[in-house]
Image 1 (cartoon, helix red, strand yellow):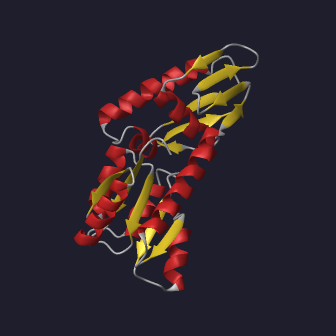
Image 2: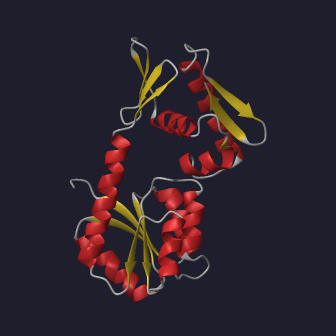
Length: 227
């Protein structure tokens, strides 16, 4: 791949974490190394990695708990679990909470890299094929285009496109404010919430040619796109 893959590695064994970080960096990865689950969650929100490699047994917050919190706001980022455990129940739990792959220690760096490339490539392929019909509009998510029937397309900003994408994926269901704020703004504070309200207003205008589409404000909870 031409561009560096940004990878967040959460590993509490300092020596192993450093070895993995240096080995991945020599193979042209950008690695964010965290020694516990709390720090990893903060870095996930601020650094926007493309893939997560999480040790299961970590202080402050274990890998499974961290994955659950991330899956509550992000259902697409690939997650690989690292563990010394070998029980089938642990493997099942890892996949059931949203893990995409599982590596048992000890493992080779080459095996980890192959799995990372496979998951990132698969995720990019799925994302870049997202052309969605909503009402009388066609929404090309990768190109950030919104087109009304046979009319000219409207160019969306990066944040408008991602906000609309999440509204569509949750169509006719409430998209919780805190979830989307943490996902797109990295925080759910007052100023970010006001900013999101502005973006919602912009999307309403851009969808206004189809009066069957509505973005409803569900007070105290979030927004819902209906058609």
